[in-house]
Amino acid sequence: MRIVVLAGGVGGSKFLWGLAQEVGEKDLSAIVNTGDDIELHGLKICPDLDIVTYTLAGLVDTDKGWGFAGDTFQCMAVLEKYGQPVWFNLGDRDLATHIFRTQALRQGRRPTEVAEAIHRALGVGARILPMSDDPVATHVLLGNGPMHPLHFQEYLVQRGATDEIRGIEYRGSARARPTEEVLAALQEAEAIFLAPSNPVASIGPILAVPGIRECLWETQAPCVAISPVVGGRSLKGPTDRFLRWAKVEVSPLGVAGLYHSTLHGLDGIVIDVADAGDTSRIQALGIRVRVGEIVMHGPEEKRHVARMALKFLEEL
Ligand code: FO1
Image: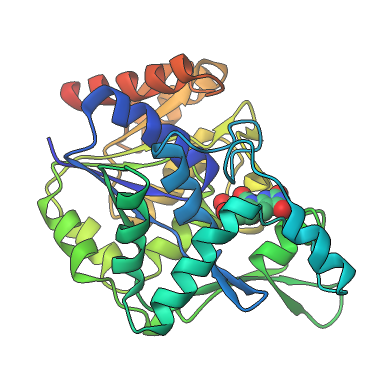
């Protein structure tokens, strides 16, 4: 079965890893958010693509959820001596990825080709596709009076996502086009999952690329979300803050409703036992619900969530 997963970084990669263990990598494609991409030290950094790649390659630092396991940060220490901003921690091995990517892009290779070269070199068999080859940069608008924009990584990492969000912009998205690879993956998909990633900051930029949402409107493939919210809180990061800004209830019901209206119909959602009370209200929207343990720490939990989602799909 050809499976496509729309994914952000840490939550998306955990779900993808579980799926890869259950169904193998051959028919698995990830369409990954690139709105978090940032240029630092003259290098193009694609955090979500790298998190997904390192996770599927079995190389990720599973404690942090990003970067290579066992990486060192000696280059950062020297950059700091040179007075360079070091708030975004780039490991020494991780830097090799950014150097290779930046060079390949400068030579004129497409971001999709470069992402493929990286994940193939690291031994990943699944297809890891940037949502677009065109640049999109997610910015968060802050401030009490006049609003000022901050790049998503500055908001998340530099400022710790503590400020109240006043707005969000997916800069460049209106001009961005999905790649042929993304369109083909969606058209050929027999099942589509929305990973347990931030619906506004991670899945939102993917759906904002003109053409992707339309593909999802038209697809015959079942579309199932895994809730990124458990018991009124984000599984990872500031998802709750972003949902509140979007005036979406911080619950599986809120997430299901958001996807249902954006996609003109969501077939199903996998929610945690802690939220079983939402079931009938989600079903009232015409969305099927599967309840189980969806918090993913260790490998067995990731495989369990994948198995549950696959079984749910069969029964839809
Ligand atoms: N997240 C942090 O909280 N602090 C960091 O210093 C940091 C560095 C980093 C470097 C490479 C990379 O691929 C990811 C990195 N992340 C870091 C994670 C990243 O900011 C976010 O988790 C994702 O963009 C959100 O999906």
